[in-house]
Length: 326
Image 1 (tube, rainbow, N blue to C red):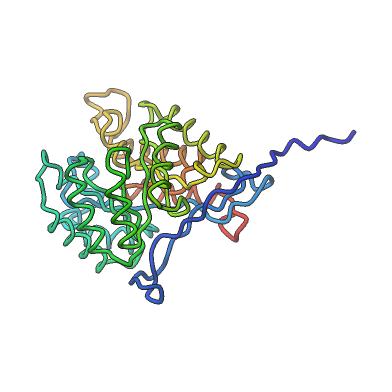
Image 2: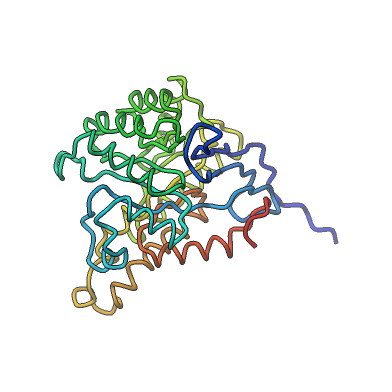
């Protein structure tokens, strides 16, 4: 009896996006990172090609985040200096990129000046040679001030700048076109809004093959299953031939996980949950692994143990057809 061929026949391809610029291309990076290019869903190499593995971006902030002590201790004293923090993530934990976020620029949390933020970008670029993700503070008005300065400080480095939303996309497009960066487009876990933001970017003259999509991440127990389906649906839509959804995807896992009680509360207050110093990074790694299976190309992580665990997962289970992991 001949078995029927039940493989999916995808007609689309996810855009390849390269982050970082080598000296010969006008930058100072020692390596670049390329994501995307898939013609199938994660791990299903029998249906198509997966030329690039998912990558890990190490979380760095301009100030010490409001995180539990076990996480700050695991990171070490380098958490006091964004440049030293980034250097440790690259040299000791082998992250592929640095994700630099600016909670200290939030008007309600330090209100750092655009010039101060730009200096942090320069310090991190001088400290490491991997590509850089520059992420604002989340306040539209303040991001419209700090992102142009940060973008200019990294001109020519082909960074990934974010996030572009329906309310601020014009500013982000203008600076990325001027300084030759890529864009993170943001949506609130909504396929239609994600598509609309990409339409706005495209209508502004920005090419979608320079865009990485971000659907707001949720932690395990707080909507992970819903975000998982959105990531998967976005990837399927792109593979079915919709160019507006054929973008790689990023998940800011660390920023979400260490805001939920199950990942940060001691066992005394949450009985029978185990040591929080072990539970926290496990929560982070489980979220990262889940989103990678849903179609995330970049996961942003903070805890060294979570980074190492996720690296093992990527190398073990995410088979590529381009000479990647086995």
